[in-house]
Length: 161
Image (cartoon, rainbow, N blue to C red; front, side, top):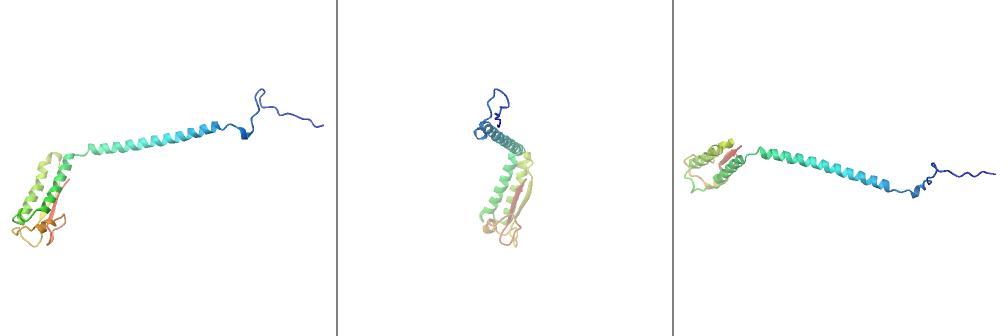
């Protein structure tokens, strides 16, 4: 006759483990959420470090920036625009045109000397082919730019750093 043995639980007084299909998965779910939360917290910490570094760099740039230099650069730009918009009635000769804008550009170093503004370009040159005593032609002045003058345009370039 075959003997029948019952399986005894691992520890007396404790119920036997339920079958695998019936096990409670809440512990694993909690662990999953804990890992997700830790990953999100890590990304948030990384974002804080990156943003604080960018803000720090911007602050250093602003601390080293002098608004008076910006004002000097704006004035130089304005002088270039004025030279290009000068009309034939504004100046009798090209010499007058050249001297006026060259003088105004040179004065930037005096006006903004406290900010160590330096004029790096002061080039106001009539269109080629004429003399200082020729009448200033509004069309040639209007075409003025930073490049070397030609027969149809003057050169107007005031720059500050």
